[in-house]
Amino acid sequence: MTIIEAEGLTRTFTSRKRTVEAVRGVDLSVAEGEIVGFLGPNGAGKTTTLRMLTTLLRPTAGTATVAGADLLADPVGVRRRIGYVPQAIGATGGGSDPNAKVIEELTFQAQLYRVPARDIAARVELLLAQLDLAGLEDRLVKTLSGGQRHGGRRGPAGRPGRGAQPDRLRAAWDRRHHRRRQRPQREGG
Image (tube, rainbow, N blue to C red; front, side, top):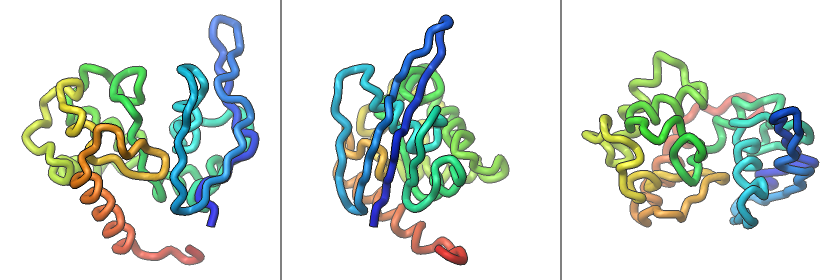
């Protein structure tokens, strides 16, 4: 089964009356269980491509499906099927602010993934416990150790090995698998 399929994925940005093509026509096919690394120099479009594939940034052109959900037609479906944590936290790394508190960052990420407002506090509380961050809610994210920041990485688009401790990675994958088994099956899927 193909888990990620992209054709002509493109993203342009307009800045100071100038158009910059950050990603130019990416074609990508990733089979279920396949491990893929994005390599390239700074500014090559690696993070922009991942942000498009995780619905955090809308492509300018092209099409893609992730885990069977269409990137443009069903972004919520994509987010339900994946998890993504950027390589760095902070204004330029996918987080909210380099001076954000742990609780603020988790709340912001929940909002990005469109977790219903009524569920955010409970979801954040659960994550704090699962990621061994309980009691650190008021710490600045930038003061956390690499293991604390990245220990819970998961998902086909994340970078699961960087700074992650093997026992935490295993526990995160086990929790994800357990949650998926507990979800009610939708008709046709």
